[in-house]
Length: 232
Image (tube, rainbow, N blue to C red; front, side, top):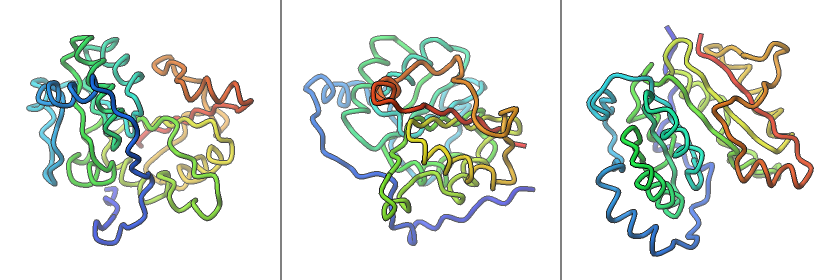
């Protein structure tokens, strides 16, 4: 049996993100007011009943830090047979996703605007997810900020415990040092196995369209790395 890692709320003072105000448009504000009842979930430290939440039993993908939600909305529309849950702390991005979800008329998407660690620890039951995606998280490139990186072993062990056996953890970054850090950390998690034949990176999965971060990375000459690990 894999032990669920302990990440104590009271001790966790270093966040992997900074809540920036950003500019929120009038349309995004309306989406937050009008579409949140249809798609939004208020954070509560109680386990979610996913089958009841979606009204069906289907594989569930969690995307952590979905940015403006373009990737998540596209996947939800393209894969109606799968349930999707997005977690993001920035309200403009949440509003943007709600607009896209409302326009597409998807019924298989829910959104939480809260810290992903709290959500994983308190709201996602063990072995409940078929897939977790974390695409282009903040690399915190300065050495003194490395402690803020979301990909640390306790977090990876927590995420792995929420996957079903055979479930997929998919990461992507355009910052080469962070890719190496991710690979090193994930290799230390006994519950996960690398899907790469050479024990390194994988090709971009068909389910992941090139994001604006990826396009920006290519323009800057960055190599985009995808990592795919599966729950043993």
